[in-house]
Length: 464
Ligand SMILES: Nc1ncnc2c1ncn2[C@@H]1O[C@H](COP(=O)(O)OP(=O)(O)OP(=O)(O)O)[C@@H](O)[C@H]1O
Ligand SMILES: [Mg+2]
Image (cartoon, rainbow, N blue to C red; front, side, top):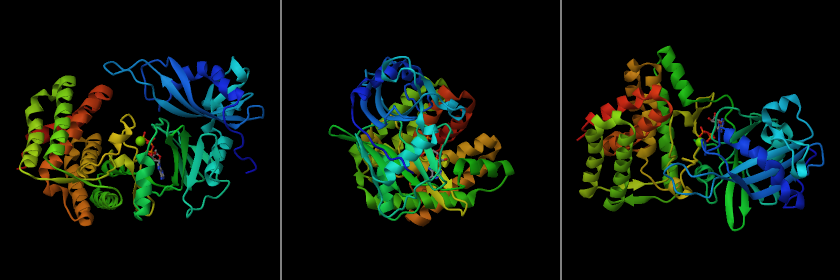
């Protein structure tokens, strides 16, 4: 590739760039799948950093933007500085038809007046430039790329943007790499890079090892912007596979067991790589209080939960009672949002876990907290239940068999079966099911029956 990332910094053009872009971006941003502040207008945009990657006087101009979007606070929330978003903006005289879906708009004011601006990730040349910047460890303005010196990045890989609904944006390069551009940017150590790097150091093969990554250094603060990882070509995710087997009436226990093993491999490597902590009565009380508060809020929001409230609360009380007797647990870094959709099976049958970002709406400190590994296990157990119910309510036996196989697989690697700590498992499954009830009631009422059936089971079960 002849082109390299060249100019940088805030020039008089970049300084006034927002005069051209703001009116268009205020309309365009809230329509993006990854925009977090849906339902509230964008009242203003302020630049956190503007980096000119290609000057706009050529056939293609290219800007990297970090922009803070100002919005009125959500009802009941405290005023907030506004989320910072990462954008890659292309500038052309006119867009070729193949780039029509990428259009942001025609500029009327400011330094780019008369030009067309668009979402540059759709375009091959800007996407190639990004890979080239990572390959050559480029530093441009606030942008700083780093890479694993042991992994090769071939020049000239052909990019394609993934168009599936996502909370970030991903570009696949020649079926060899996948670049995940984080859309909501926060300063600090980001688990989406931290965890795969830690696992790579441990030699854990269950997570694609980061090949290169991009930071923004703004003042004293550094933020992760993007992570390049090997692409598992021809992979299917666990959710797709589970539904396929369910539709055929096939057993999925061998895969469930392999997933249990994969989860345990990741957990044991993370427990070696990153600090663990012991949870005594004080920490457990805080944890149980959080669960109890979430239950109370959920019952307020979804009256269908009310009959089960005492039973669900007993799951948390049982955990608090064990802690009061002096039981302790170990917390460690975990995935944080594990479900079948976060597991990829390669054509050779190997499982990988992906997407360690946690809940992007939560502060980084919370997303990076050590937690009992049962949190991930409970997430997977709930996911088998979801898959079964979405196929047929009568598939409960399929879910039960998968859940058992998953726990057995986990025990084979970790040396401890999650079912031997039924109180902890029930408390975490309950917390997850309660979250699901609120989510479904708000977003997908047709699905509410799925977590409600788990709620019935969890409220009734007394594992002691
Ligand atoms: N290493 C990989 N190899 C193959 N495909 C991958 C890889 N990493 C991610 N993908 C694909 O890209 C999709 C999005 O990745 P990821 O889940 O990391 O992004 P996200 O923006 O956090 O998504 P979500 O909105 O679901 O949280 C995955 O569902 C998967 O299909
Ligand atoms: Mg994600």
